[in-house]
Length: 540
Image (tube, rainbow, N blue to C red; front, side, top):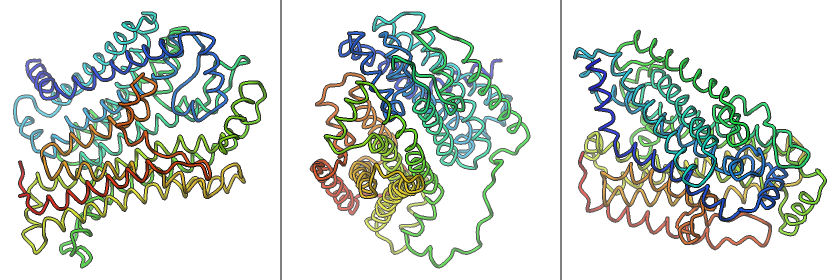
C-alpha cells in the first residue's frame, strides 16, 4: 500500500496543472452556461419555444442533447451536458495513455517496474488517479450548477453522470493503451472513440420520438450505444434516475479488468497490435523530408480522414430523418421552414453545416498534429540526424507544412465526398452538390489557422508547441462553437476562427471572414518559415 500511495501522489503532482485546468474548466462551463441560460431564457415559455424549434431541427439536437422539458435545470442539461461529458471523456483517455503507454515509451515504466512496486501497482495508481480526477470533475459540475441556483438534487445527478462517463473512458483509454504500440496511436484511437460516442449520442437524439407538445424527446436506439447517451438517461432535473450510471461504470470495470489482464501477461513495451518489422533499407521514395514526414504521419492522417468520411456519410444518410422532420406540421416548424427558405437554406443543409463544423475541427486537429510531430522529432533528437544531411531547416519545416495542408484538404474532401455520395444514394435533392462542396471549402481557412499559428509558436517558443497548439484549438472550439451557449461576449467569441467560418447560402454567402483567415494563415506560415532560417534545433 505504501508504493501505491507514493505513486498516486506522484501522478497527482505530475498532473497538478493539467488536472486543475480540466476540472476547473469543466466546472466553469457548467456555471457559465447555467448563468447565461438563466439570463437569456429566464421565461419558461421562451425555453419551451426554443425546445420546439430544436426538436424540429435535428441539427440542433446533434450538437446539444436530449430535450426533457422547459424547466431551467432541464433546459441547461439539454444545452451543455453532452459537451461536459465529451470533455470528461477526453481528459480521462489522455490521462490513461499518459500514465501507461507513454510511460512505457519513455522507459520510466520499466524503471518503476524494477522497484518493489512491480508492474501492476503503477497501473492501480493510474486507476486511482483517474478515479480521483473524475470524482473532482463530478464535484466541479455539481458545484457549478448549484452555484448558478439550480436544484441541488439535479445538479448532483448531472455531476455524477459527467464523472461516470469520464470513468468509462478511463477504462477505454487503459485498454486501448494495451492494444496500441505508441502513445500517439493510443491517444488518437481513444479520442476517436470519445468523439464517436458523442456522434452516436447525437444521432440518437436527432432520430428520437418527440412528445405531443414538442418539448420532450425520447432518444433513439443509437444513444444506447454511447456512454454519453447513457449519462443523458439519468434525466437530471427531471426525474433523477441513478440506474443508467451502472452502464458506464460497468464499461469502466470491464475495460479496466481487460487492460489489467493484458498488462499482466505481456512484456514491457510490447502491445497486442505489435508493429510490423521494418525494412533493412529505406525505399528510394523516402529520400525527401516530405516523404519521410508522410511516412511518419500516415497512421494519424488515415485516422482523421476516416473520421471525416464517416461524418460525411452520416450527414447524408440522415437526410431521410431530416426530410421527415421538415414535413412536420405546426406553427413552430412552419415558421422555421419559412425562415430557412427566405435564406435559401433547407433543414438538411442546416444539418450538413453542423456536421461539417465538427469535420472542420477534425481537419484542424489533423493539421495541428503535423506541427506537433515536428516538435516531437526535435525533442527526441532525430531531427538533428535528419538535418545533418544536406537538408535545410526551412526545407524541413516547409515539408511538414505542405503535408499538414494536404491532410487538412484531404479530411474535408472526404467529408464532402461522403456527404455527396450518401445524399446521391438517398435521392435527396434538398441540398445541391455545389452547396456540399462549398460548405467543405468554408471550413478550410479556420483549419489552416491551426496549422500556421502553431508552426509560428514552434519557431519562436519550441517547448510550448504541443501545449499551446492544443490549448489554442480547445479555446477556439469553446469560444467559437459553444461561446454563445455559455454566455461569452461577442468580442471574445470573435477571437475564434470558427466564429468567422462562412455558412454557404447561395449567392448571398459572405466569404470575407474566410479570406481574412486565409491571409492570416499564409502570413503566419511564411513568418514561421523565415524565422526557422535563424533558429537552432535542439531537444530543450
